[in-house]
Image (cartoon, rainbow, N blue to C red; front, side, top):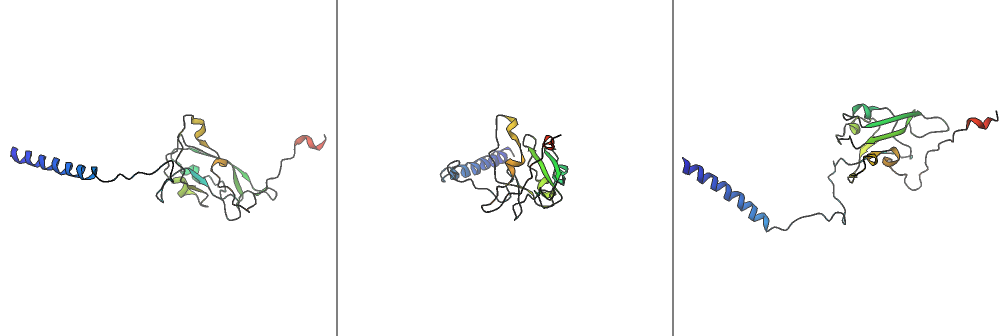
Length: 167
């Protein structure tokens, strides 16, 4: 019985070594990062992106569903009402502040699934490492998709100072 165990173990080692030797002489396949483009799978979960609609307005309507769905509580939102003079999004409200703390984010994708307007998505940004943790808090301006050429930015009315009335 010991001879069978020894022969079985030797056969397993020989089989493993044959795979190792066969692979050793195959050409290596490496990506040319950072000189070449990085290739991602379609479902890669990278840095979050806040989307715009076809008119250039923000899709986020500050419904707070993404923050509620987040298990690590890393999303912070402050909302404001859209007015006739200030129209930022297509809904009644918009996010004045939209922060994601990547010190806490686990890239689970629950925020993306919870968003009813598809305002937040995962992009392909992956270079998020930092020695300074304060740089890992991404603000709305960092995540918002830039306007396409020819699109007009939403108009924000300037606040009237309280002392402008001459009182």
